[in-house]
Image (cartoon, rainbow, N blue to C red; front, side):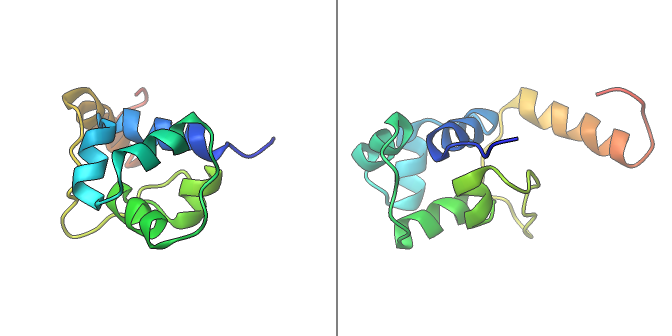
Length: 104
């Protein structure tokens, strides 16, 4: 199975967190125009901006760029706003993983 392209992965990570380009730009300091170019398909150079983006989204740089390791990097406090639907899904997922339920 091939790796996920960066632009698709960035869109996915933002979607599941209920984020818009303006939200990510404001939180990371990455210009909205740069984020827009990345979501349109321009491949990024490894930079401080990418490191900030990965940290803000709570994923490793590898996961951000390739879609590998689809696991959240848990921190003491996540500053990532999740939609109510995403939050409910994550709670159900935790129950399934911990053996408390059979379906997500």
